[in-house]
Amino acid sequence: MAYIYLGLTESAIDPLPPIRWMNGGPPGIPTAFPSPEEAVMLDGTVRVNFKSRQPRSWALQWEMLTAAEWANMVALKLTNRSLYFQNNWEDATWRLVAIVDLTYDPYLNAGPVGCRYGVTMKLKELR
Image 1 (cartoon, rainbow, N blue to C red):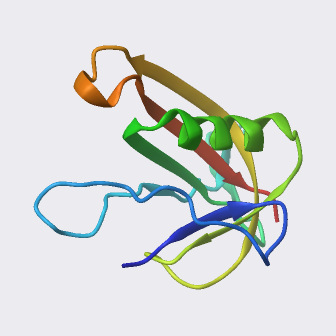
Image 2: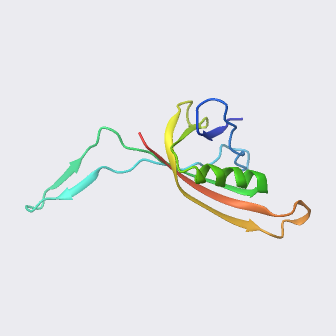
Image 3: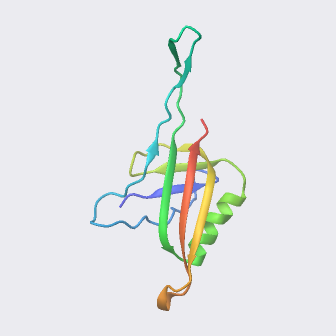
């Protein structure tokens, strides 16, 4: 099983909770590659600004996380620092990212397990 890591350093960090998905296939982790900037000139021609590097972004989503797993993600967001990210479903490269959005919904009637959380986290590559 591949893991996804997110933390303040590349060493001694715990993996994020596993993404649970249906049908046993690899999880759908959307990775966005932004389009180059386009501008329309006065004569109607289109110019494209190809940057040397296009930063990626990732949208990660979990359901039924425990209160402790949810609290760890909130603590990462509250650090307001750049974080190291490795998605082993993609490759083993460490990337510097920022959490640009973190939303969560509590599931209060989760049965005998108590309160659980649905969490959506959006990351953006910094360099």
